[in-house]
Length: 435
Ligand code: KET
Image (cartoon, rainbow, N blue to C red; front, side, top):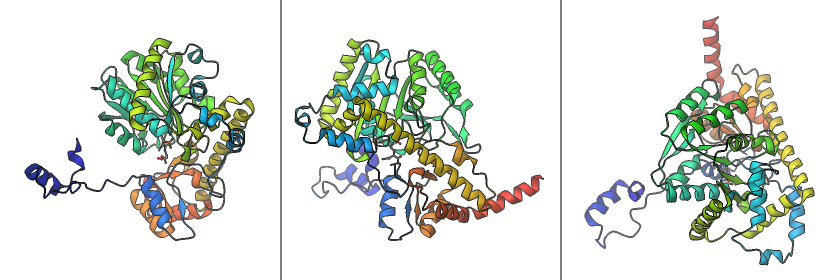
């Protein structure tokens, strides 16, 4: 497995002189590929321009481009300050936080919690929850694959690769129509071997901003019953698609109604602005509480060997917010405010491009949902935006709308207009030919 990380020269060395002392311990280590998302932040930080804009990482910013500490978090901080609870809480088990998280997935009145049918553990944010699940999958289904949507969050590939679970992809986004390729997606579900693992983004798909409709989720769920597939939902943006936490969990609730067993990774990095605290939850829906206890103990064992236990402060913040009705309702309002701000910026960006007289169709900016706009910009145009305008985004043309503000949206629209001029000319010519 380690073979692919070696340089060619090191492979030669490794074959001929593995035991030789002339080979240093780490001579065979080649640099890893840059992370497509963190690499953007690095380039942005290195740019001295006062006009620079970071549209790379999907972390929420306010309309001045500043990271946000939500009011509910400030109040939770005040509530737990100096609390002895901090010391007495068992770092590895916060049942309250997990219980409240599971309610966000399945609904506050769902029987899942009452019946103790969910095996949940705190995780190191959404990434850690995915990683725990991938390890769990390997432990109990070592021959299995994981199906990802094409495209998906770039780190999914790393996470399941490091857990040694081979990946496959299913059709998701159609770049021509800039929408969901539902027919191809359904074909892939039908053609996958029975009992396959599939990863879904339940809402605000990253990077495309395109989600299935309620009806389409029902069809997917039905087909999953037919095929016996396992649905794993990576829910990193609950609330960011519609502004409503329950609506954004609708896909999972449909699968629940259809009596699937379900896996779910949750992150509070975006929805509570706790990116640096790394708070998340992994839960697996089970047939009964006995199975849940067994599964929970296995996941806890995996976590114990990987990182012991998660830092406790962030967990305490989330627990305090979710279990205090006033703080929870403040949080719900703040999620809506964040989602609405992003939506408004989508409208302004599209309007500005149209006002500039762009002959390209920018409807998808407002049709898409959640934190990201899958702009359709080419890697060449993305490079030009960085080099000529100091605007940074991932190579696939994904714009983190959280980085778009009242102050920079004009500049951004102008820059996009500028780098898409030749495409606009082509569009005009094609249009005149077809008339
Ligand atoms: N799942 C998805 C779909 C996702 O977009 C992210 C983060 C995560 C999980 C992990 O989030 P965490 O911070 O571990 O709770 N995505 C953004 C941030 C990042 O890549 O670190 C992003 O795509 O920019």
